[in-house]
Length: 267
Image 1 (cartoon, rainbow, N blue to C red):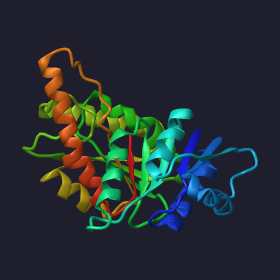
Image 2: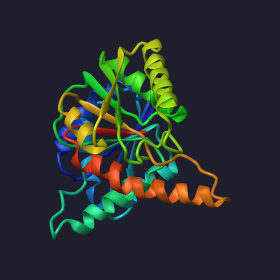
Image 3: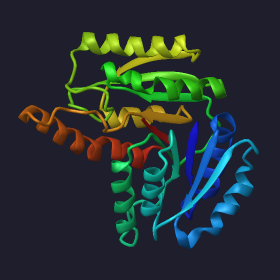
């Protein structure tokens, strides 16, 4: 697996390196370390902390004058299977607003799965997969099952039933009826179990964001879907779905990334 890691200056940088080290040991065949030009010295410091195995193909990437430019040029040049990033700006203050806006613009445009490390950092023993259901939810299976097997972690597939129209999971085009949703969620849990991940399905009723955040208190990693689902934009309905999806990324996925008390994996 090709892993990329932002090794420049950031919040909880030490925690990021500590969290990333076992992931690199378990999965990395190739590792790209990323930083802006002005922070190039931090790449050697990261290598000292991470101590990757000699067999890992190591690449240093220093481009751009800020974190966004460094990350985007790195993944454009050689797309990783997973990007490991820290929180790059403190929660909103007058002085940090511009940097924070740049961070979330970056997160909204990333074309690869990414794991944002922030908050309570613990070994991965329990994984929470928040899913809206739909056939596309199986997209998370390969990476989640790899993580679960590598760290002998238990997986919970969480679905929150609500009157809200929620697209944050990126796994469904339209709000599904209860029966198809339950069927797809059961298939997701069964597929993870079949791949060696001890998995259970939990369906609860409530407000999506608040319920997911409350459940996070009992887990080490939150998994949510991205906004990368493709819609047919040649018809009006497709254009409206695209707009709703983008709005949903701002309203739900962004809030979960911002407020989650544990690291978040976005697939």
